[in-house]
Amino acid sequence: MTTIDLTGDTFARTIADQDIVLVDFWASWCGPCRMFAPVFEAASAEHSDIVFAKVDTEAEQTLASAARITSIPTLMAFREGVLVFSQPGALPAAALEELIQKVKDLDMEEIHRAVAAQQA
Image 1 (tube, rainbow, N blue to C red):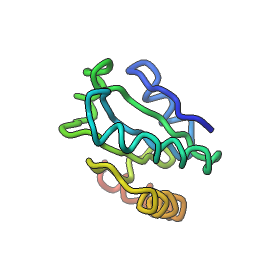
Image 2 (image 1 turned 120 degrees about the horizontal axis):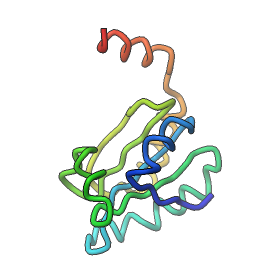
Image 3 (image 1 turned 180 degrees about the vertical axis):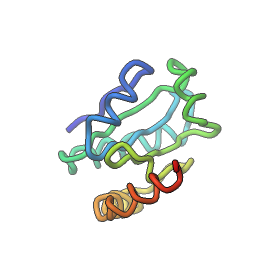
């Protein structure tokens, strides 16, 4: 699967409607972003069960601000609508694969209970 571009209009719906979504916040002028892009794209080709999405922080400044992006690239992972990972910096391919496996292996019942407890 190829990566998709997210906007302020499509972000929340994509996160809510998909099981696992990885989001790369980037900008065209960012060297580390350009280095991470092929790694992210290659992983998207290997994992058709995951939505790989990109947010251009220059074009989507309001969305980047709402997501509290202070450094790029920043990678976020959502599972069942819950943010389960957020970290700035370009990951090497092996680290991205490890992250993907960890996200797939999460016990989401436990995470949903923890989120409900925090909101109560």
